[in-house]
Amino acid sequence: MPVTDAAALLSITGLRRAFYGLEVLRGVDITVRAGAITGLIGPNGAGKTTLFNVVSGLVPPDGGSIRFAGRELAGAAPEIVSAAGLVRTFQVARGFPRLSVFQHLMLYGRDQPGESLLPALLGSAASRRREAELAERAWDTARLLNLQRVIDNPASALSGGQKKLLEIGRALMAEPRLVLLDEPTAGVNPVLKGEIAAHLRALPGRGIAVLLIEHDMRFIGALCDPVIVMAEGRVLAEGTFESVRADARVREAYMGVRA
Image 1: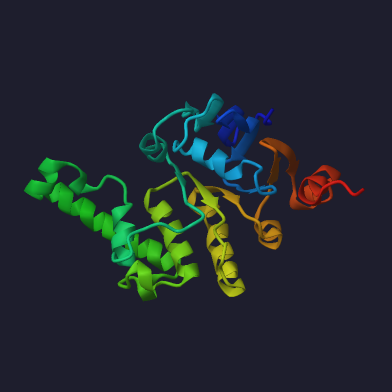
Image 2: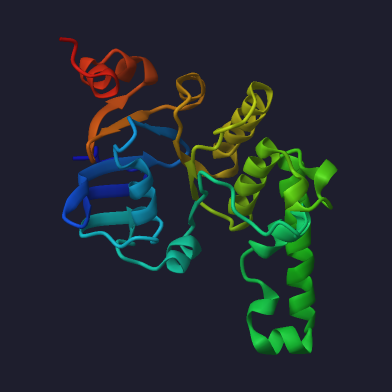
């Protein structure tokens, strides 16, 4: 069971999900605390991405509880989960190749005035104010992630690392309290990995907690506390990076039992 904590932002209890009779999540218990950067690691097939899919509302759970900021979200639609302040990114950066970085960021801003027909047609003063607020937030987000140099470039012209930063930027435009990051440094060169780490390290100071899946153990060790290890659809271990690295069960899950 997850540890009860007054600072708990996300509490997952007994979460289960099966596909065609195969259990992928087998009673997952996880607590993510406000102000923390929590790492989620484990061998391929452990259920990490499925966990993100269920928590973010893309896939409904078969059972269990997902409480976020005191609100039950198990089975809620993705737009409800996002509106509550829980936003996720994807391992493969998504987007619209012809849209510029600025347009991408604007697209993901909350409370868009163009989302309702009447304000879009009338162009009220309130709509114009909100549009200006979103534009300012998009520029601030681009500066935060060092994307201001390419803000007018189409997404298709960005490097792999810049696309990862844009994926993070789109999540930040949704004004989240918790961001789920799925392999934010996959395919990124070491220099840009350090830059991404620095950006993520600044998020708790902005009131944003982070739960991230990552296979680069050096990245996890430098950034995350605590670290949660999953294997075979369950939580295997949790603690500091050093403590889970020294855990014999974790070594066995990654490397198998020596004959």
